[in-house]
Length: 132
Image 1 (cartoon, rainbow, N blue to C red):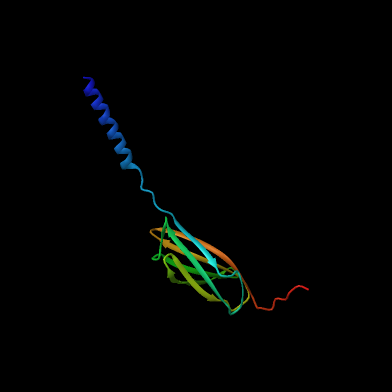
Image 2: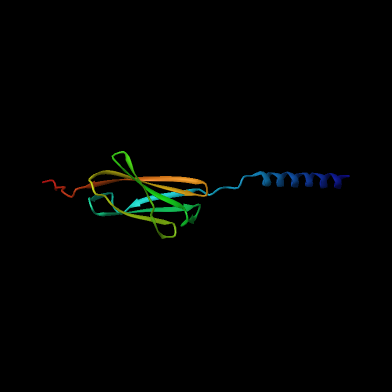
């Protein structure tokens, strides 16, 4: 009888532990994006190189849907597709034709996740003078 009781309790515990494993949700890796510029202050007609780095968990992703949005004076100028430089790196080289504060936002879609990062750029006409 004692052996039967121990066997029954063992089977009950094994059944409970397996059901908790079967019902635990699979962990979904996080989509992470960083956005950098080779400069934050530039002059009109000079190229700024903007780089977005994209990871999904620990994996560098080169097949995400990536768009750069340029915002000037609070208005979006539209979306631009970047070039894939290397694994996980998306690069956009752009020039600004007018001085002022600009904002660039990178939009990344991957596996039903969406992530955005933004930076501000200051564009001058090149006539800044040194303080005397």
